[in-house]
Every structure is written in structure tokens, then in C-alpha cells.
Amino acid sequence: MASPHTNPRPISLRRHLLVGILLPIVLFVVVDTYSLYRQALNAVNIAYDRTLLASAKAIGELLEVDGVGDQAVIRAQIPYSALEAFEADNRSRMSYRVSDAKGKWIDGVQDLPQWTGTLPNQGPYAALVDFYDETFRGDAVRVAVLLQPVASTRGQAMATVQVAETLELRHTLARKILLDTLLRQMLLISVITAVVLVVVHRVTAPVRRLSDSLRQRDEDDLTPLEASDIPREIQPLTDATNQVMQRLQHTLDHQKRFVRDAAHQLRTPLAVLKVQVQSALRGDVAAPLALQEIQVTVDRATALANQMLSLAKVEQVRQMQDFVTLDWAEVVRAVALDVSPLIAEKDIDFELVTLPCSIHAHDWMLRELTRNLLHNAARHTPTGGQLSVRIQPVGDNAQLVVADTGSGISEDMRQRLFQPFATGDTKSGTGLGLTIAREIVQALDGSIQLNNRLEGGRIVGLDACITLPLNNPPQ
Image (tube, rainbow, N blue to C red; front, side, top):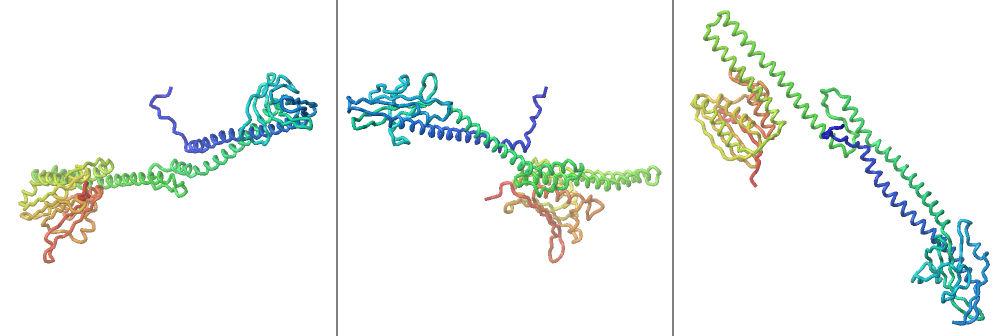
């Protein structure tokens, strides 16, 4: 027994197209078949009604009259051969009745029900004729009624001629018309179905080829799909799939690079740490000095590991996209408070100017970005120097400017400063701070620039300028 949570089997694209195309066509053919049958049956009735009218006129022409008005006497001498010419075959039988204007029987079968109807206002015939359906001797019949004026040299009168015909032949012909119509319509449906099958098969062939290509791919093959022959309606799906594969490739490359860099960068401090421990065990270095060197190495390895984890976390947060609206000015003030011990230790003249800047971001990203910039600026500002932090709205963006009074950067360093493990201070830096800052800024659709501040042609400091889009820019 299937589980109630089992997902239903999805309908195939081919079946969906076939049902969507053939069902309306079949419904139309059914309605069209009924309409054609009704039209054909009406044409049959008109044709056979003409035969009935002809037989009634033939009988009317054989009538004679003596007298006028109430004294008129209508006589009929009608042989059976007068109707025989109008009988199509032995499957139908014809009967007639002739009566005067008052309904008095004159000739023919007396038990044929007398006509009590009225003539139509406008009929298809110029004669005074009416057609109706009746039951005669247990059989359904079609009756033609002709009001026939009878005139001779001996008088004139009005006679009523009724001719009835059983419906066997009409029904047989109607069934034949229906079967012929159904046969043609079934042939039409078969042709349409075959054409639709061929067309759907050809249309879905590129999708099947694409599916086969995906199934045959290696597990680590994330190259874009080649979908030049895919129908235009399915192109957005392949484009979205390529975008997902591109993101997966980016994530995979980032993970590979992280593992490679981690293995390379952590190998050096661990090797140094091992040498320092071995040297201390041999007594080559005094224990206090050895412990001090080991502490420095452990601190650098710890800082490196923390920043590498931060770099990996940037990509994780980027993929999650759980951003909220934050005031960047509040984050800057909080981070400045965290960095204040380093600022106080170097006796730096610190200036902080903040204006509210609402942006759509992740709290950890903003804090990590601001902490890296402030910590980097405080570390490169000389003792007794100046450090200025200003955040304010500029147009549709929020702008953070961190200005220190350090030695600035060379042109060569400017080209590679945002690359991983590129640092101008190999003693204290890990070379990941600005890399983390750039990754965060790119994830938030912003920009970052490092510009030397000049006075009189001399470098007097470095300005780090970060621009992020405001969540609600001023109108």
C-alpha cells in the first residue's frame, strides 16, 4: 500500500501536449459530427418530403368535381400505380387519404388520422402544403398534406390530400449517413493524432537529448548546458539551470581554493611551532623565551585560522541570503567600541562621525567588514597619529570612509592588495583582511577603494572608501 505522503507521478510533457491538443480536437469533432448528422438528416427529410409532395400533387390532379360550394361533389379514381412511382423500394409503404373541405372521406384509407393542423405562414413550397409526423397502424409515418383546389367545367371545390410514408427508408439512410460521417471523422482524428504524435516527438527530442546528456555527465562536470536547439519556451529553464550550475561551480571552486590555501598557509606556522618546541626541548633556548616565541606563533596561527574561517563564512552567508534591514551607523559605533583598546594603546587621535544609513545586509557581514577596516587602519596608524571614521548617505548609497595617517600603499601593492595572503606587513598581518572586506562588499553589491591621501605631493595617509546601496534611498 502506497504511503499517503508519496508524491504522485508527474505527467510527462509529451502526454500533457497530447491531451492538451487532442482533447479539444476530439470535442470539436464530436460536436461537428452531431451538427453534420443533423444537417444531413434535415437534407434527407427535405428530399423525401419533396417526394411526398409530388405524390400528393399527382393524386390531386386525378380528382374531379361536380357542383359548386355545398353542392360540390368530389370524385376520385386513383389507381395504386399513381403512388407506385414514388415508392423508392419495398422498405417503405405509402398510404393516402382524400377528403373534402369539411373533412369528409372521399378516397384512400379511412383510418389515416385526419389533418387538424394549420398551414405554415412561410414554407419552402408555393403550394398550400404542410408536413408533420404521425403514428399510423402502429408505425411512425411522415405525412404531407396538400390543400388542392379542384376545378372542372362542371364545378369547383377544395380537397384535402394526405399522403403518409413509413420511415424505414429514412432511418436506414440516416444511419448510413451517420456511419459515413463517423468513419470520416475517425479517419480525421487518426490523421490528426498521428501528426500530433510526430510533431510532439520532434519538439520534445531536444529535451530528451538534453536529459540524456545530463545523465551521462560526470559528477563534477558543472559546465553550462549546450541548449541551442531547445525550444524557446524551455530556454528560461535551461538558462536558470546554467545559472544554478554556475553558482555551484563557484561554490566548489571556492571550497577547493579554501582547502588549498588552508593547507598551504597553516603548514608554515605549524612547522615553525614544531621547530620551536623541539628547540625548547633540547634546551637551545631558555624556557621563558621559547614559550614567548611559541605564543607568538600560536597567536599568528590562530589569527590566520580565524580569518580563513571568516572568508569561508562570507560565501556561506552569501548563499543563504538571509539579509535584513540594518543601520550601518549603529554597527560602526559598536565595532569602534570593540577596537577602542587598540586605539587607546597607540594613543591615536580618533574621530567618529555617523549619520543613519539603512541598508539591506547581514549583521555578521557588516560587523566583519567594519572590524577588518578599522583594525587594519588602527594597526597601520603610527603611535600618536590620527584616525577618522565617517559614515553618511551619499545619493542612493551609504558611504564609509576610514582615513588613517599611515604610510599609504605603493602602486605595486595596490594591484595585489585584495588578493588572498597579500600583505604589506608580513610580521603582523595575515593578508586576508582586505580579501574578506572585498568579498563582503561584492556580496552586498557595493564597491571598495583604497586611495593614498596626498598633501604637497607627499603621502600623508590612506583612505578606505566603501559604498553600499541604501535600502530606502532618499526621493
